[in-house]
Length: 488
Image (cartoon, rainbow, N blue to C red; front, side, top):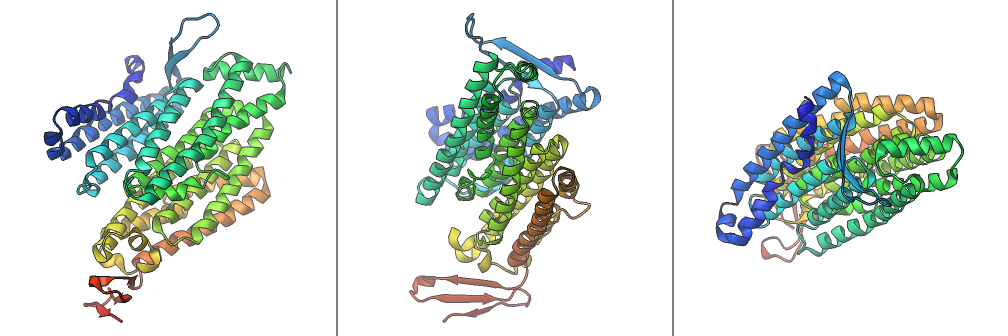
C-alpha cells in the first residue's frame, strides 16, 4: 500500500496519452485519424477506468487507516523563494478522485453516441479528457500555487467546452461570459494566495494552517488582514461554484453539448469551489467572520437558485439553476462547519444531477426528431409533454433522479440534505426555516419539469413548416393509438 501511495503522483497523468496521441494523429495522419475517430473513445474510457481502480484502492486504504500521505519536491532552489510541488492523499482527495472519474467515465460512454454525428467528435474527447486531467491534478495538489495552476486549466477547459459550437454566436458569447466572470473570482483567489504567502512565507497547506493558527492565537498578526485574504480565497470558490453574486455565467453555460453540462456544470467543475472551501476549512474555521460570510452567501444562493428555477422554460437552464441552489446548500453546510454533510451532499447531488442532465440530453434528442434542430424549441418544456411513449427508459431514470434531488427517502439526496437541514436548526433557526422552505421549492420545480416533459400532451408551435410561412400548430395525443394533426 505504501508503494501505491508513492505512485499516486501518476493519477492525473494516466489519461494524458489520449489528447497527445489525438493531436499527433491529426497532425501527421489527419485523414486516417478522422476516419477512425470512434476508436479514440476506447482508450479514453480505458485509461479513466484505470484511474478509477487506483482511486478506489486509495479510498479503501483511507477507510481502513485514515492516514494522510504527502510528498513534495522543490521546483526552485533559492534561499529567498522556495517553490515546491507535490501531491497530497487524504480522505478528501480519495473522495473527489472517485467522484471525478466515475462521473467522467459515464459521461464519456454517453458521449460516444451522443456526439457521433458531430464533426468535432475528436476535439470533444480531447477537451473532455484534458478536463478530467486538470480536475484530478486539482484535487491531488498539496499547496495553493499548484491548486491555482490546475484551477486555471479547469477554467480553460470549461471555456473551450462551453464554446464547443463556437460558430453559433450565442455559444461564443456564453463561453466569454463564463470566462470573464470566473476571472473576477480567480483574481481574488490569486490576491488571497499572495497575501497568505506574505504573512506565512509558505504555500503548503499543513504549514499554512499551523502558522496562521499560531499567529492568531498569539495575537501576532492583524486579524482583519488575514480575514481579507481568506475572503479573497473564498471569491474563487464563489465564481467557480456559481454562488451569488458571481452566478450569472452558469445558465448561459448550457449552450455547450449536454454531456458537458452533466460533467462540468453538475458534477465536477462546479464542485471545485466546494472542494477548495473544504480544503481550506482549517483556515476559515479560526475566522468566525469568514464562516458567517460563507453561510450567508450559501443561504442566499439556495433561495435565489430555487426561485429562478421555477421561472425557467428551458430544461437545461432549469437544471442549471437547480445545481446553483444545491451548491448553496453545500456552501451553507461548510459555513456552519458541517464538513461531512457538505461533502456527503456533494457526492449524492453529483450523481443525481448527472443522471438528470444526461436524461435531458435524451429528451432533447427526441424533441429534435420531431421539430428538427432548434434549441429554442427542442429544449422548451412548454412545448413538451407526453414523451413517455418515446423515451420510457429516460422517464424512469429521470424520475429516480427527481426523487433523489427532492430528498424523498430512501434515495441518496434525502440523507445528505436532511443532515444539512438538521444542522441548520442548531446553527440558526432563521437559516433553517429558509433552507427547509427552499427544499419544498426544489420538489416543486423538479416535479414541474417531470410533469411538463413526460405527462399530458405534446404541443409544438413552430414557424416555416414544410416551407410554409404561416404558423403551424401540432397537437399530438400520445395517450391514444394515433396522433392528431391540425394545421391552421
